Image: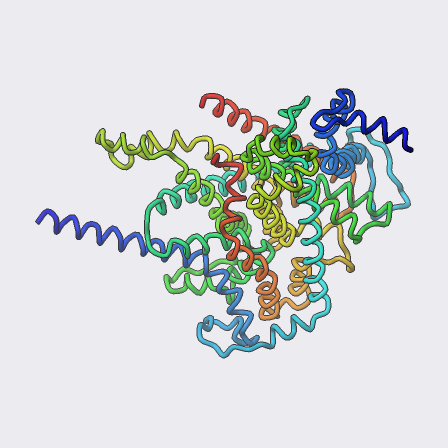
Amino acid sequence: MESYNMNARRVINDIVFYLTLAVMLFIILFPIYITVSTSFKFQKDAFSVPPKWLFIPTMTNFKAVFLNEAFAKGIFNSFTISFITTILTLFCATTAAYSFTRFKFKGSNKITSSILITRMIPNIVLALPLYVLGQKLGTIDTYPLMLAAMVTFALPFQIWLLLGFFAQIPRSLDESALVDGCNWYTAFYKIVCPSALPGIAASAILTFIYSWNDFFFALVLTRKNLKTAPLATMDFIAFDVFNWGATMAACTILILPTLIIGFSMQRYIIKGLTAGAVKG
Amino acid sequence: MDIKHAVASRNQIPGDRSPLDWNNRQKLVPFVFLLPSLALFITVILYPICYVLWLSAQDWNLLKPHLGAQFVWFANYAELLKSKDFWSSILITLKFTFWSVLIEMLLGFALALFLNREYYCKKLVQTVLLAPIMMSQVASGITLKFILAPDFGYLNYFLKFFKIPGPNWLGDVRFALPSVIAIDVWLQTSFVFLVLYAGLQALPSEPEEAAAVDGASKWQIIRYVIIPLLKPVWLVILIIRIMDALRAFNTIYVMTQGGPGNSTKTIQMLDYQLSFTYFKVGSGASLAIIIVFLILAFGGILIKQLNTNQGND
């Protein structure tokens, strides 16, 4: 009798668990499902009342979106800016993190805790002066201005993240490299970086995603030339408030790259996101 | 050339170098490595911040260039501190931050505890949980605007089954802020979960087992063993979430633009409107400085908490 009760209790426990899990997954996936499914709907199906769960799919929305020059340009701009930002940020962050973990110099401790503080600066504090200065110098809507803002804003977090990874690489590795005749630069490039590759990968992925999803700096510092994908997507709402199908198609395309990267590089992303908070 | 070479190579005895040469070079190396980041910081952060300070003392409307910029000392700050808009936006920002961070931390923690066990399709669940973090906030903002639409939105349709008339969520002064808070919760709880879950995984199992052997109930274990051990991780994620919530902008811009009325106008939103809708860059700059002070004050207190906590370990 006793063991029967125990088993029954465990079964009920499991049922409750998986049920709650299902509800939770539904809540998270529902908006994404709506985004994708609405992009395949005809106008009349998109906002029919009551909403249609079964419908005939169509590609007209995607056609409209792809043929939209501004949106295509937006995607291209997002790719270029994200790519360049990632490379530049990686370069600056790895060198800085290497410097902090290998050398003890005056103020190195203060600098590491002030990195956490620089992470707290709201984007407008950076965007406003860059905008005004940009107007004066005529550099609004150009690559240098946008990249400078993106890289500088991404840097604190990436340095913080890489600090954790670089600190885990023992200095004995550096020292043996130095004894073998490398100077510090070669030791950095040829020895330490390859060992820190997982951390560097995590940093690169997170920087790319952050850069792709950026909205504020693009909103303030770009006009027609460098308009990024999120801004171009917003334009769909501005044009034609009722063309939800096309807007959703644009959203679907917008989230596709980051979702693909996210799903395929899960391990790195999780490592990167939890690096600063959890030790080891 | 040859003499120079000879002298130089004489100094470079293999395995050893002239002490002067070596020391000087050694001292420079850390700074050479720091150079890219440092250069970037000085030109793109330090200089602009000084510029913002200067801007905050100007009365400058970019829409009226003929009036130019006039030096007005602290007039902008005084004007802000006296305006109702400013104080209401502070209140709204605090409300937003308080509720979203509270709910996210509790939900994220509950989730982490809930999922801290073996079960099927674990990988799938982790994948799904990553989605809100990866998804562009613009896209999620637009989608949720669609779901919350009064006439054809899914939420109101769902509520019809329970005979509850669904209001205009984003257009109603009473519901706009709660809706925006709910969106932020949907977006960020996964992040809190991820970090707390990783923290839970990294915890040593002996204290838990010892407590269980001593006869502690599940709740007691959570309260007296897990929570204290998890405190450092908790604090870090709390700091990160508070800082991010205080600066929330993207979703609010996409969904309500600060409206209806002023009900979702956080200080970020107000600053954006001051600087880039009305182009009163002087006031915008002074508001930005005030925001920085607020955040630094908050952050300073919290970081101090974190440091004292780590010191105790």
